[in-house]
Length: 102
Image 1 (cartoon, one colour):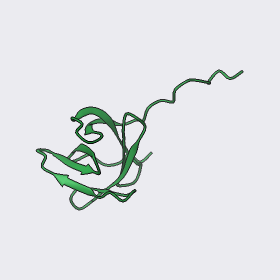
Image 2 (tube, one colour):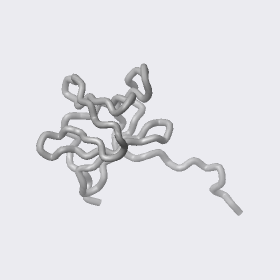
Image 3 (cartoon, helix red, strand yellow):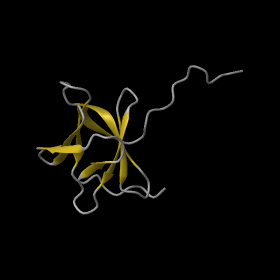
Image 4 (cartoon, one colour):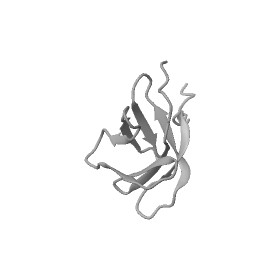
């Protein structure tokens, strides 16, 4: 029998962050920050299943895009890294902490 048919996969594990997905969207705490173990890479998951892969600069903690043609554009943000990639905007804590090792 196919007991798992139709069951949804669990969502990504990580910290909830504010994001504004799409042109004109308002910020809401609906995205998930996933840290890649043993790496300065992170993945920002959108509620619709989309995502962005980023590298956190070890020198200053600033985010930088890994995938796609759209660069990270830093914006003003108090106590957070606020930035845009294309029409999507995000707010990350200034010090997201080290990536887990396991």
